[in-house]
Length: 244
Ligand SMILES: [Zn+2]
Image 1: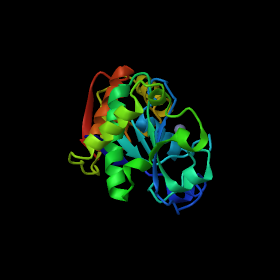
Image 2: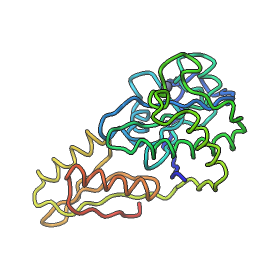
Image 3: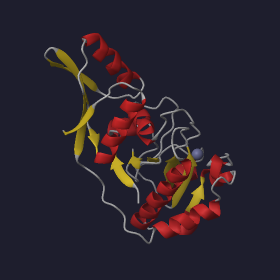
Image 4: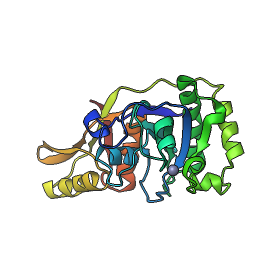
C-alpha cells in the first residue's frame, strides 16, 4: 500500500508543459527519474514540475519509497516518452532513484500505484509498458538492467491489484521548529529549507527567540518526511507537526 497525494501543476502552467487535455489513456508508461542525487525524491520532483521544470518535460506521477505524488490529472498529454503516441496516449509514472531512498520500496510503491491507476482508468495489464517501448530510450534503467526484472515488476502490479487501495490524503500540516537563539541562526536554517528543499518558510518571533514555520504539506506522511529532511540536514533539533 502506498500513500497517495496530489500536488497539481496549475492549469495555466500545465498548458505550457503538455500537448493539451486529450490523453487517450490507453497506456500506463513506466519510467525512472535517473536522478540519483540525495533528496531527489517524489516531493522534490513534484516541486520541480510546479516550478516550471526547465527541461521541457512533464509526467503525471512520481513515486519514491515513501509516497506517490500526482502532478497532472490523467487527461493531460504530458511530455515524457519522446513520441507523439506515447505522450498523447500514456499516463506517465516516474520511479525515483535518489541514492538516499530505498529503490526496492519505491518500485513496490510504483506497482501499488499502477495497480490503482489501471483499475481506475480501465487500462489492460498488457498496456503497461516501459518508456523504452515508444522511443527506445534505456528507461526505466534499473528495471531494464534487471535490478527488479520486468516480470517481477508485473507480478507486483498484479498482486497489488488484489489489495485495498488507500484513499487520497487531503489534510494539511505545517512543521514548526524548536527555537533558535538568534535571528541569524533561524535565517540560515530557513535559507536551506528554501533553496535546497524548495519550501515556503516563515520566521516567527517567540520572544526572545525565533522559530521557523513551513508552508503546508498534504497528508501526515508528507509532513513526517519533511521532519526527517530537517533532522537529516541538522537544521533543527526539535520539530512539531501542526494542523494547517
Ligand atoms: Zn522515461
